[in-house]
Each structure stands twice: as C-alpha cells, then as structure tokens.
Image (tube, rainbow, N blue to C red):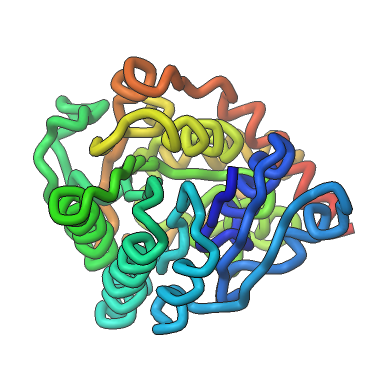
Length: 316
C-alpha cells in the first residue's frame, strides 16, 4: 500500500513509519523538521529494502496540495502539528496556523489525490476540557470543551474532517490520544512530561513539577499508539476514538517510577502550575477495543524502563 505520513520524522511519526515499512508498505514522509529529526528515520533510510521517500515541506505550504496530488497515497496519516499547550497559550495564532490551516491543506491535498483515507491524531488530553473526576475515565460521548488554544485547534481539525467527509466523501478516523510517551520523544522539543523528566534525570538535573504533583494523566506507550494508528486505516470510519490506558497516574507517581528506574535519589522541585493545563485526565479505551480491536499492552513501568534505556544510550 502507498502511504503518506505528515510529521513522519517526529517521535510518534517515525515510530509509525518504521512499523509501516516493516509491513512492506511504500511510505512518503512530509516533515519540515521543526521538531522532527532525520536521525529518527536513520535506520529506515539506510535499509535498501524499504520504499521510503522524504520531503522537507511544511504542511502549511501551498506546494503540499500539488505534492499529494502527484503522490496519490491510499492512506494519509496526518500527525504534523504544533503540540505544546504552553506554546498555544503564548502564541495562539501560530497554533491555529499550523493545526487548522495545515490540516486544511492536507485535506485539500487528499481531495486532489483521489480521496484517500485520512487518519488524524486528535488530542484526548485537551479535547474534553476539565471533567469532574467522578466522570473519569472519559468516554467519547463526553462533551467536547477544550480549555486551551491547542485543544480548540485540534477540535477544529475533527470538525473539518467531518465536513470533508460529508462534502467530498473523504473517509477518516480521528484517534484522540492521551499522553503518549516512549523512546525518541524530545525532552527539549515535542511536549511530553516523561521525556522531560527522563532528560533531566539523565543530565543529573533536578526535575521540576508544576503544581503540587497531584494532577493526573493517562500515559500510553508509543508502540501501542502506533498499533492503533495502523488499525485506524481500515476501521473506525467517520469516528473519534479514544486511545489511552484508562488508568490515572499522578505526576508525583510518575516521578517516583522514573526516579526508581533511573536509580536517582534527587527530590523534585515544585513550581506554580502552568496556564491552560487541565488538572485531571483519563480516557476510556473501550470503544477502541470494540471498533479497532485495540487495547494497550505496555505497562507504565515497562514503558518507562524503555525510555530510561533510550536516554542512557543518548547520554553516553
């Protein structure tokens, strides 16, 4: 199958590309390398048996539509995005430019390419706003009420997908991801508390926890997410589906697990909470199992050990 991945040099994107190539697909990657890195694709690019092409291009570029029309993919994975809530609060116009206009370019490109299936990464961590803790884990029927520009921009992407399906017949599957973590996540680039904590511990620096650390998140390992993305190419048409572990973990608990895996005795440093971030979030993955046949299989402890091993290699 011929597949296009936007943001394919990023943390999740490159892991997806590796999976698709290993399964024998022909993959075209579009990435402007703002947060992605060609080093993430080094193994894939060096394998002569893989059919991989890379295009250094911003999804906001007018050239994107023409390129997609020429490539004519059968499936488009749209992962390219501005993903940092803090950046969206500080620079909401930039956030909308990348996440809304960039998504529109991709959808126009899909239209010109003959209506391939589009698999979109939505934000389960921001889509539902700040639900009452008694409502957790959140089902897809929960009202959408994002509380940050990032959440609004990703919600706009879902609405445009639904519109393009209705108007032009472009089928899609939108996966609302919880907090994805794993090897290759950049502690200094793409947002991710696990990577940030691991980077600090690897450098011997104290970890800063914003707020009192009792805020909770739903952490899901990158390989599990990639498996859901692959399934989304064939199932879940026209749907928004939660992809998460279904389990809450406090930031204090996360730090303890990471520090224990690293063998660190450094206590964390606490700072004031940051604007735009919700206090509690956890997604119910039941629908993903029902529709995609998907469920997470990597425990947080197993995933953290893989992250620690990755950062140990990086900081040798």
